[in-house]
Image 1 (cartoon, protein in one colour):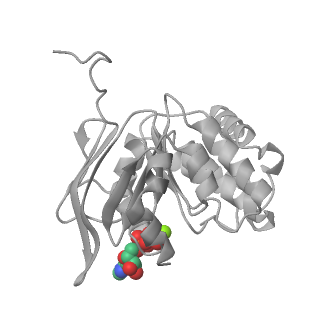
Image 2: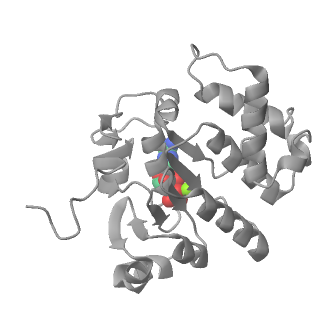
Length: 250
Ligand code: ADP
Ligand code: MG
């Protein structure tokens, strides 16, 4: 029988019983969660709680043992990072990694090429149009021909997100894109992430700035020492005793 609200949609991403060890240290311990299509999902937790490790397992930078990652119904657990990118998983790095000798436009072209399957030929003019439309969307159009070394911190963060967007993701993962920014810059990046999130793009946002997570997220998950200690609406998670204790401890 169908529930009154209809069947639950298939999860976009299903993480099941995921564990990640570094030597004898367990960074992620039996983490399971479903992310719904179109969801704005906030991931929080004290420093060292395993947030970036989880992202590395989703993007394929780390192999998980054991555990599975299923994306749009396909088990991608054994796929290398570039194959996952081509299936629609994109992440921006906590520490921006631009190609410093290149312009903003060139940085984006690298990302576009990376995500393009080699046998579909795309004319140069069309690639340039795609690239410029992404830069415009990210408020970086005027910086296209500027060297990446000349960008301000907030522009670098936007370029990181632009590079992720260039791979035409279904799932965009932002790892502390707001760290070190002023409060008005935080709002800029937050508005940008809000504008990207929608039916076609699901966003996982890792963030330390609680106001930003609260505003952004449909659901929030809190990790502590590699385990999920709370998951729910932002208000539920913020009110959670274990979450408050985890944050007091840091
Ligand atoms: P967070 O992003 O929540 O701050 P991380 O996922 O980066 O935390 O790290 C979780 C834990 O795993 C930390 O104790 C960290 O030192 C450890 N860790 C992360 N990456 C590695 C690695 N490549 N090798 C060894 N230990 C790691
Ligand atoms: Mg981290």
